[in-house]
Image (tube, rainbow, N blue to C red; front, side, top):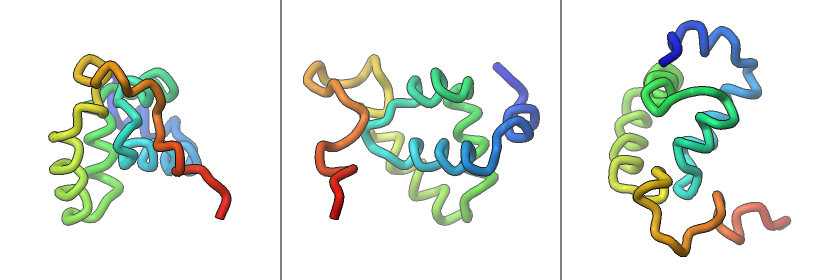
Length: 91
């Protein structure tokens, strides 16, 4: 596992924002974040703990711990995409 300090220093502010956004998304698995940003789940947790307010981090952890869609191995077979069909619709 990479050192989180090294990972954080190598991320641009836009990349850091994107990792946080992906971590909040229910259907984006941690494996997708690892593939795109080379950050293991523990690194993402450390980043979220560092970047979010304590209450927001607590809410995020409660939310992700119960999600089968946040882990590819636990995902139901029918979930094939990383986002909800209405998530990126133009308003």
